[in-house]
Image (cartoon, rainbow, N blue to C red; front, side, top):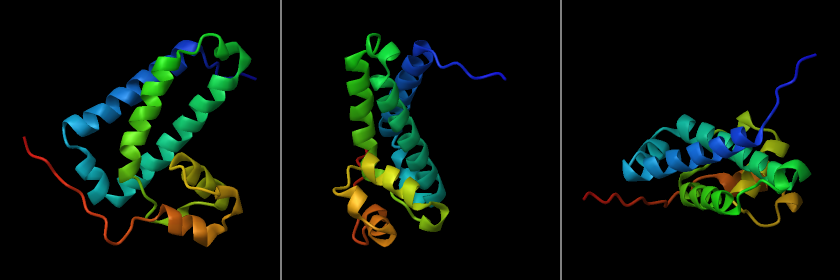
Length: 137
Protein backbone atom coordinates (compact mmCIF):
# COMPACT_ATOMS: atom_id res chain seq x y z
CA UNK A 1 0.00 0.00 0.00
CA UNK A 2 1.36 3.36 -0.99
CA UNK A 3 0.96 6.39 1.27
CA UNK A 4 1.52 10.05 0.57
CA UNK A 5 4.45 11.35 2.52
CA UNK A 6 4.08 14.86 3.89
CA UNK A 7 7.41 16.55 4.26
CA UNK A 8 8.24 19.69 6.14
CA UNK A 9 9.03 21.48 2.87
CA UNK A 10 5.52 20.70 1.60
CA UNK A 11 3.95 22.19 4.73
CA UNK A 12 6.28 25.19 4.60
CA UNK A 13 5.59 25.87 0.90
CA UNK A 14 1.88 25.49 1.49
CA UNK A 15 1.97 28.08 4.28
CA UNK A 16 3.93 30.50 2.12
CA UNK A 17 1.56 30.04 -0.84
CA UNK A 18 -1.59 30.46 1.25
CA UNK A 19 -0.25 33.60 2.90
CA UNK A 20 0.70 35.11 -0.47
CA UNK A 21 -2.67 34.19 -1.97
CA UNK A 22 -4.57 35.88 0.85
CA UNK A 23 -2.40 39.00 0.57
CA UNK A 24 -3.08 39.10 -3.20
CA UNK A 25 -6.81 38.87 -2.45
CA UNK A 26 -6.56 42.16 -0.60
CA UNK A 27 -4.03 43.90 -2.85
CA UNK A 28 -6.18 43.32 -5.95
CA UNK A 29 -9.56 43.72 -4.19
CA UNK A 30 -10.44 40.13 -5.04
CA UNK A 31 -12.23 39.81 -1.69
CA UNK A 32 -15.22 41.31 -3.52
CA UNK A 33 -15.63 37.96 -5.27
CA UNK A 34 -16.01 36.28 -1.88
CA UNK A 35 -18.87 38.50 -0.78
CA UNK A 36 -20.69 38.22 -4.12
CA UNK A 37 -20.21 34.53 -4.96
CA UNK A 38 -21.58 32.52 -2.05
CA UNK A 39 -20.33 29.16 -3.29
CA UNK A 40 -16.79 30.49 -3.76
CA UNK A 41 -16.91 32.05 -0.30
CA UNK A 42 -18.14 28.86 1.33
CA UNK A 43 -15.63 26.64 -0.51
CA UNK A 44 -12.80 29.00 0.41
CA UNK A 45 -13.97 28.96 4.02
CA UNK A 46 -14.01 25.16 4.09
CA UNK A 47 -10.58 24.73 2.49
CA UNK A 48 -8.88 27.40 4.61
CA UNK A 49 -10.34 25.77 7.70
CA UNK A 50 -8.89 22.42 6.63
CA UNK A 51 -5.48 23.99 5.96
CA UNK A 52 -5.50 25.76 9.31
CA UNK A 53 -6.30 22.57 11.21
CA UNK A 54 -3.57 20.77 9.25
CA UNK A 55 -1.01 23.45 10.14
CA UNK A 56 -2.04 23.25 13.78
CA UNK A 57 -1.66 19.47 13.70
CA UNK A 58 1.78 19.55 12.06
CA UNK A 59 2.92 22.21 14.50
CA UNK A 60 2.34 19.71 17.33
CA UNK A 61 3.86 16.64 15.66
CA UNK A 62 7.23 15.96 17.32
CA UNK A 63 9.06 15.52 14.01
CA UNK A 64 7.91 18.90 12.69
CA UNK A 65 8.00 20.67 16.04
CA UNK A 66 11.74 21.31 15.89
CA UNK A 67 11.67 22.45 12.26
CA UNK A 68 8.58 24.61 12.46
CA UNK A 69 9.17 28.29 11.78
CA UNK A 70 7.16 30.28 14.30
CA UNK A 71 7.27 33.50 12.27
CA UNK A 72 5.93 31.80 9.15
CA UNK A 73 3.17 30.16 11.20
CA UNK A 74 2.32 33.54 12.78
CA UNK A 75 2.21 35.23 9.36
CA UNK A 76 -0.12 32.53 8.07
CA UNK A 77 -2.39 32.88 11.09
CA UNK A 78 -2.45 36.67 10.62
CA UNK A 79 -3.46 36.19 6.97
CA UNK A 80 -6.22 33.81 8.08
CA UNK A 81 -7.39 36.40 10.61
CA UNK A 82 -7.56 39.03 7.86
CA UNK A 83 -9.74 36.96 5.54
CA UNK A 84 -12.05 35.48 8.19
CA UNK A 85 -14.24 38.57 8.12
CA UNK A 86 -15.38 37.66 4.58
CA UNK A 87 -16.08 33.98 5.20
CA UNK A 88 -19.54 32.71 6.09
CA UNK A 89 -21.72 29.65 5.57
CA UNK A 90 -24.55 30.25 3.11
CA UNK A 91 -25.63 26.67 2.46
CA UNK A 92 -25.44 24.91 5.84
CA UNK A 93 -27.08 21.72 4.60
CA UNK A 94 -23.78 20.90 2.84
CA UNK A 95 -22.08 20.39 6.22
CA UNK A 96 -22.48 17.99 9.10
CA UNK A 97 -22.12 19.07 12.75
CA UNK A 98 -18.44 18.08 12.95
CA UNK A 99 -17.59 20.24 9.92
CA UNK A 100 -19.64 23.14 11.30
CA UNK A 101 -17.69 22.91 14.55
CA UNK A 102 -14.41 22.98 12.61
CA UNK A 103 -15.58 26.08 10.71
CA UNK A 104 -16.67 27.72 13.98
CA UNK A 105 -13.29 27.01 15.59
CA UNK A 106 -11.57 28.59 12.61
CA UNK A 107 -13.69 31.73 13.05
CA UNK A 108 -12.99 31.58 16.81
CA UNK A 109 -16.64 31.27 17.80
CA UNK A 110 -16.95 30.89 21.56
CA UNK A 111 -18.19 27.71 23.26
CA UNK A 112 -18.26 25.67 20.04
CA UNK A 113 -18.57 22.30 21.77
CA UNK A 114 -21.71 23.34 23.68
CA UNK A 115 -23.59 24.56 20.60
CA UNK A 116 -26.05 22.46 18.65
CA UNK A 117 -26.38 22.49 14.86
CA UNK A 118 -28.80 25.43 14.63
CA UNK A 119 -26.69 27.55 16.99
CA UNK A 120 -23.57 26.78 14.97
CA UNK A 121 -25.32 27.73 11.73
CA UNK A 122 -26.54 30.96 13.31
CA UNK A 123 -22.97 31.78 14.41
CA UNK A 124 -21.54 31.08 10.94
CA UNK A 125 -24.13 32.87 8.79
CA UNK A 126 -23.55 36.33 7.38
CA UNK A 127 -25.35 39.03 9.41
CA UNK A 128 -28.18 40.72 7.52
CA UNK A 129 -26.71 44.19 8.08
CA UNK A 130 -23.16 43.30 6.95
CA UNK A 131 -21.53 46.18 5.04
CA UNK A 132 -18.28 46.16 3.08
CA UNK A 133 -16.26 49.24 2.30
CA UNK A 134 -14.42 49.35 -0.99
CA UNK A 135 -11.51 51.76 -1.10
CA UNK A 136 -10.46 52.84 -4.57
CA UNK A 137 -6.95 54.22 -4.70
